[in-house]
Amino acid sequence: MGSFDRKVERNQVRMNKKGKGPQVGQTTRNSRSTLGANGEGDVFKGRNIILPFLLFLLALLYGGVGIIGNSAEVNSVLYWATIFLYIVLALAIFLRKPYLRINKSWLYTSKFNRDRMLDAGNISKIKVSRNKIVIEPKTREPKWVFYRTRNRFDTEAMATRLELYANTHHVKLEKE
Image (cartoon, rainbow, N blue to C red; front, side, top):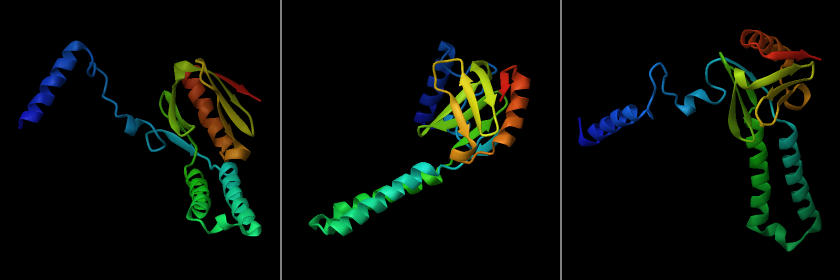
């Protein structure tokens, strides 16, 4: 064992004594493995369609106006790079699927390109309808809304799984 390994081990022992390390009965949680759509639990994936379509349309419009206007800027590299980057952004948003992952006592999703998680104790209520599902947290966080038409979620399958989750964790469930 090298000197670096000994230093790491000493620091781990010191942090555990201070109470800042992993507690007894708790497992250390790697944030990369617990967040995201690839963890444990049931995963319901949707598809972003509207924003990528609008970005692609904007790129086409920008390119069409430049070509019809026949200006000198059409020949610049920056002009074509802008159109190309709009298309790349549309593709990236299209390929990144929105999701809802239902774990034992946690819900996970991605909002504004960040992974969010919500404990069953922090859920005020879950509203289920045919076209959308709304999860309202008790905290000041915004509601989690999953649309059937906008994001192509299978709301019926999500509703049955969330009903089981709500019954298990005594969360208020409203059907519309």
